[in-house]
Amino acid sequence: MKTNTIKEFTGIFKKEFENFLEYKYALGQYKKIEGKLLYDYLALNRFLDSYKLDEIALTEEMTSAYLKTAEHLSQSTRHHYECNIRQFAKFLKSQGYENIYIQYDCAVKMPRDYIPYVFSYGEMKRIFAVLDSRNSIHDCYDSQLFYQTLIRLLYCTGLRLGEALELKIGDVDFAGNIITVNHGKGNVSRLVPFRDSMGKWLKNYNGKKAKPGDTYFFESPSGGRRSNGSISKTFRKTILPKAGISRNSVNGHSRGPCIHSLRHTFACNALDQMIKEGKDPYCALPYLSVYLGHTDIVNTEIYLRLTLERYDEVVCAGHYIYEKVLGGGDD
Image (cartoon, rainbow, N blue to C red; front, side):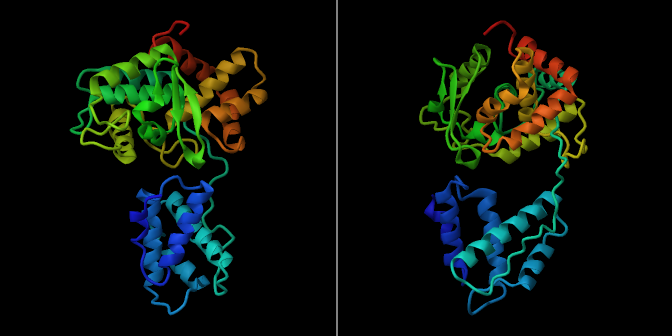
């Protein structure tokens, strides 16, 4: 873990925040203590410091006041605030501090009937038409080839955006058509195969963009890892509108379609392929769960329901992957 991130905590809670994050990191629950994760806990640290306590305490009033600061934010962000302070309170309690309030009841309920957005055949056709049209993506930071390759990779392998951007050059085995995902979400590592047709895009990108000294496969033009946020923003605010796809909320998805929807679409298409090959869908779930890097098969089951409910649409989208996006054939 990067020690230069830990020293930014201050006040009476400094040591406990450091120990808390070290503990979470050791458990494999956090693979990196940086970015938004670090920012959120630094913000909590500053809030608790504002009470200028002489001894460590976390009362019900303090918890309520902290959650009140997030009232104007989105449902998911308020949920994160609540989870963060609950986890930190549990840790403080485990360290022997007595005046600690733990809010077990969730004030912010996340919808349990969440339905992932799955792109249809027509939508995917329009997305790739946008990506492949000349000068379609005007981004001073990134090239058209980057988006053409990245979006295809996410769509055809089901990788999370963060996993793709975290790939090192040595993680892509062109000879064996295998991607090694090291320490993905939940600190889970796995191997992800890809077809020859996808390999052609990866080889082409690597040949044209890789520079001596690069670490990441999708190295930023200025060096280092690319930002999830800027790429997600370009996908939602540039690519989707040009493809004629609304960004409005659909089927309980608070953000509407987004770049993570490519992973949802892949999962449904993969299940459809297994069903067409005669596999029992419930027996196929564990395989898909491992492939996607899920630590709990419950996270995979929703794709089965979605596949069965939207079978015709999923079949069309799956057909488009193999016949159009990747060039078809048996590779």
